[in-house]
Length: 422
Ligand code: IPM
Ligand code: MG
Image 1 (spheres, rainbow, N blue to C red):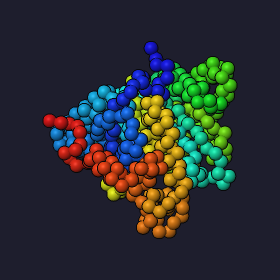
Image 2 (tube, helix red, strand yellow):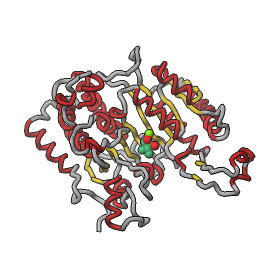
Image 3 (cartoon, rainbow, N blue to C red):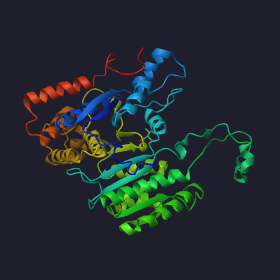
Image 4 (tube, rainbow, N blue to C red):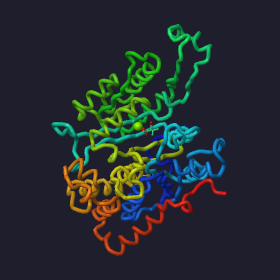
């Protein structure tokens, strides 16, 4: 039986076990900042550490030897911890291209735990605004399908000879060097992401749901998505939810022209990948963007930002994305009051932009400070400022004790990493 509301944890509890995964490089700095903010809230959460990403890939090679099929970015310990906890908070991982056998940790998690929803809000934040002339109010929540489409990983190169006989469209490719990647959609896969979007609209009082597709050209896959969307939409008419389907290229254009006209947006995997980055850029960029990979049995809340390897362990990166990601996770756990406090505090810090509270990127990109490098606050300073807006007593010894605690929780030396234990 499908759960009624997958956007909420399966079982409400007095205390939760939550997995935290820093990932790689600046992911550790971000996680330390997020945990500091969360410390100021006195949450009913017991944290359990797990690791994944490039750091685990290197470790697995050390353990099993290069080329061993057990080498991976995700150790079995991490899978177990995700299974054993109520939710997971993840910072950022590093990918390197051209490494034989290397598979993205997050793509594996999405498949392994069938995390079919990629929920990506793009909301205008106080003090950050939008790059658009009229500075419109943007509050888009994208529901990107997260397991199918070109991410199904059914690919061929060379293409087997029989494939050329399957469709007359392949005739013109005969005898040429050809590669194919299958775009696989399932009807139930379309239906569940569409329903997730409508259910969210219904639960939050949002009045518009847009499905973007290319059914005008890509008849079978996008045609299926469009047909199911229009069917499901009828069920939600009675809630006053207006449903609209449109071409994804038009969506990309209208996001720039009239972003305030969008609320809930449903997209297949690849279109959602692209359009969510666009929506994010309209609201400050990936450094501010949270996301949630959610399924029936697990939920991994992940920043949209990368791991910024060049700044690794220097505490330079903006903690906003992971702080907003934590907020999403708290909502998932039903800790709505705490979630609201986090968003409010972040907004206040971004708006005030007081010296010593704002990271370099905000000073450079949103304040236009020519001396942004000198004036920049560290990840931890900004996190401490957010925490202080949540709890004004979070200063002095209390702050120092919390800093020491989260620093220890986010150690990144070999002895601290969890996974591929002997
Ligand atoms: C995202 C990222 C990932 C994706 C990459 C890192 C595999 O771009 O989460 O949007 O393509 O889904
Ligand atoms: Mg992406």
